[in-house]
Length: 279
Image 1 (cartoon, rainbow, N blue to C red):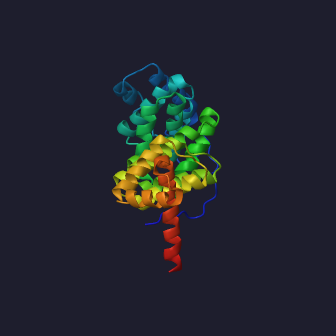
Image 2 (image 1 turned 90 degrees about the vertical axis):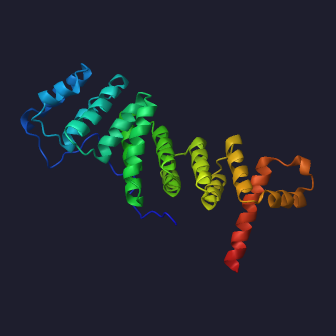
Image 3 (image 1 turned 180 degrees about the vertical axis):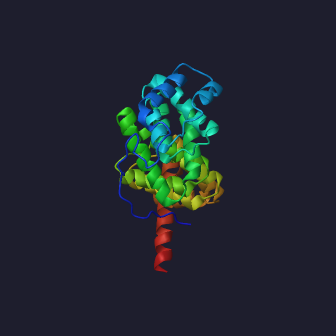
């Protein structure tokens, strides 16, 4: 199954919050409400007390995003996460892509990786079609520039790993391609994660497609990458064929290295694919 993108405008302009058509019950004093809610979480009040205090507040997308935007400093990141979950559980608020993106980037800015990964996994699970996946990437990139002056590479790598963890390997690979279109570099660890999951799922064609893409983009494999690729060749039952092919070309078996075997296997596949296409 191929996973292709529909053309979309790159990097939709986002901000911490946008005005929405909905209003709260206390429109005239929104600023006071925002300050009061933020202070309630900063002073570590329990959820029951906070809920009782703000029982008449109607949470809207705009209000939630404005509140989250107040927790910009790393020391406030836990408060942002607490508010994120509180609003969801006590008010049954359905978080938007932007509120997810703000919270995730705030957590990463504070180096709260585990919490950020959990939200990214939830976000990835909700967005799997091409258009929504691109929107996720755009939102995370734009929000990261506002939260932490553009430290977006980490959030993109973690997004790819989240899709890989969900075994959505084609989606993860499509994210890699889109990230490259935007001019950003995907980390080798993300490719290794994607390759590893694809092997576990026995999606060998995806493995070779990803590896070929890496080589084409001059993203050079490390020991982990080569170990994964040798494992693929063994699972396909093609190790001996690859070794024999290299032996005929080089003639010195003791000089073989894993990279030589893997890359020769890639070349053989490309030649066979071209031959099948001509046939």
